Image (cartoon, rainbow, N blue to C red; front, top):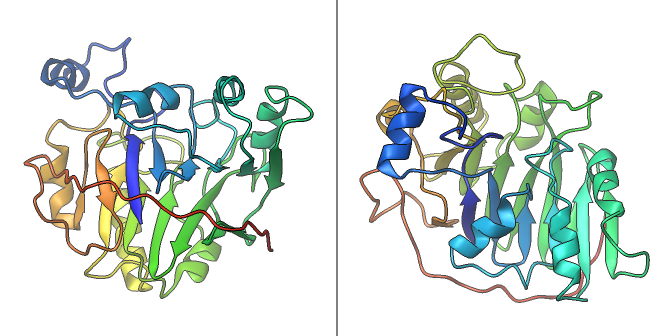
Length: 292
């Protein structure tokens, strides 16, 4: 399984284009620009799709032409950029599944022609969906748009590989911890939005709660010594020495466009900032089924 991180930034990215704080000035001077967080799995699954994501894919040298399943975590605008569906319709009539909470799907429907080969799959925590050989387990998030339960996280499993896509969320709910107990993920992509800012609503993680969340996942066997932990959804409240701050907790950050091979164990050949790149591997499509 291969994951391309098309973006690793928070809703406003990092740096925030309207901000002149030290963090934003330094990252801009370094050319370290992070777009809204999203990931491409084996060229077939797209995890979240904010308005910046299609162009981020092009900048990363990746085509979205083979995407057949779009998984949306929730209806916040940095995770749902519905114009991507219109852009896709101008060049493709291939089938597409759009999976997510009902409110996220509702934002997309008017961008799709009534006769388009698009299947809408509303989900909630506890559901399981099988797509082209990928088993998608829907998990609860400590995050909300309008109501409790309208935001989800995803476990994606194929063959013997398994990852956790955990953004946006605060400290993981007890119900989610029960489900992921013993999961022994190959890779965990966990949000770390607020950095050194710890006075905020509890629906995101910071440098105080992020290590606590990792410790909780380790305690239940969701993270093991071979799990690659990558912090995503990074905002400008983070320090510029974030790689050093995360290293003691067994986590790293990567640049936008980085290829993360899931199941490779402890990353090797890492760049000084913690990123590692691996060759592309395409996935083979198979029949699609949906379960609960």
